[in-house]
Amino acid sequence: MTNQNVVVSDAKSGINMAITVAVAGSSPFQTTAAQKPPAVPGTYITISKKKLLQNLDINSSARINAWVDSMRASSPTHIKSHSLSDDQTSWNMHHPSALDMFDQIINDSKGKQIVMFLDYDGTLSPIVDDPDRAFMSDSMRATVRKLARYFPTAIVSGRCRDKVYSFVRLAELYYAGSHGMDIKGPSKGSKHSKGGEALLYQPAGQYLPMMDEVYKALLEVTKDTPGAKVENNKFCLSVHFRCVDEKEWIELLKQVGTVVEAYPNLRLTQGRKVLEIRPTIKWDKGKALEFLLESLGYANSADVFPIYIGDDRTDEDAFKVLRERDQGSGILVSKTPKDTNASYLLQEPSEVMAFLRRLVNWKRLSLRKQFILRGRIEGIKMSLPI
Image (cartoon, rainbow, N blue to C red; front, side, top):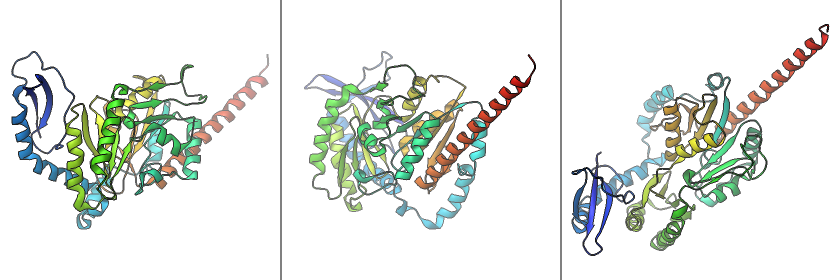
């Protein structure tokens, strides 16, 4: 796939709009934020808006079909079982279980501060048909509460920050909602936080009026599609199609695409049975991870070991950051093979909870050993003659 920068000329308005057109295999509706053409001649091609729209119409069918294929791929029911076994074996060899490799992960973190980053849906809670009922279990909540006693812990989700907080209900955590575009530190004292002021960062704050406008438009165009649910995640809008008949997917995609096309500062992406609309700013879960590490005092530090656990495509941005930093561990939650930058695998939320409990127990035992050793050293010092 190649991208071609294009400046669209609108004779009536006199405005040039710079967008990126994917030649093959990309989103049928994705555009990038308007930019001024660079000074270097030949970098941009100027064509009429009418001509561009004609070209988009010609190729839109192929791009829509590619998107629908991708939407099918996000559902495990569409994976062919006869080829799964070989793929699974090969994939597992390259992505071993984080439970099986727990000792290796701990060894890699030796002498460093572990910082935990957790996705929510599909990681701390199961994927459910109704996104408003994606509740985490009491046992998972208790596990995360214990985790936060020993390690700085952040929830990084595509959900609205207030929404994910209403699910988790732990004030001692960091929360990064809207794919990291809405970050808030602990609302009560945390031994891990740096400085006296509460952390709050919203890099896409100027987009709020636009997001509210697009949310209303999406509600209108999808209202006649049975099963479609539009969720306002503040700096990200989600159109859930988990309960939509597959025969309606193409029409739903066209409806959503029609709305997004009118807003060149927004982009359309896809997650697990969800279409997502976000600002085109260069910010994602990977950027949120780096920002939180910096806020904790670990910017460019070799003394930190981030562990990021997530199940969605958007978590790949964080996995990629860890790989590029050659630091920490990315853990993918999935039962089926998929391309990933994560190093390890957990199959479902129950395994995530098992891993977190092992981490808590290891830290608790480690601190107990340190306490006993410190006591013995003090005893030896006191027994020495003055």
